[in-house]
Image (cartoon, rainbow, N blue to C red):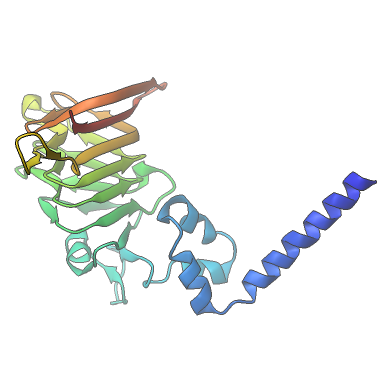
Length: 248
């Protein structure tokens, strides 16, 4: 009897909490959503109901890249270049699933989060055209999640400085006779010295649950970063990587 009573009270408390948060106005709810991580928390809130979907996907919380949009809409851009240019430091850019998004030598010099809009990373693909050094070039602390990035020559991601986090992505260098010229991740970050014995260690790359395919090797570094804490899981059709690149 006591157990059943406790369950009943628990249900009542959950209903009361749900009713209380639903009674908040749109501005309060949107402010709460702004503190959630884009993936998976804010993404999941959009699945609760139509109202929460509208608020969780509001342009104030996201910038969006959608090539299919025919009429201009606030916070929505036809390509990644324009979205990155318009973004403020700390913004999140949601890239629509379906089709191919061109990404060639796009420099990112401010803290941003780029996220694929599909359920799987294969549903949102960035294509780096042949002859480009990289699809994306990072000169600030950024996060990349749920995206597929393909490059024929050169590299998928070029890390110059800052801390780059790559989660649940696919980095793929296309098969080519010149495979030795391509590499999914390249880092040129070097440590700034303040004295003969002190280094500034803000730069680094963190990779988790990411497929890396093709190229001469998965990672190349010409700076001060070294590969650390490498883990690989063998799946049926691919390999999933976890590793860090940090100063020694």
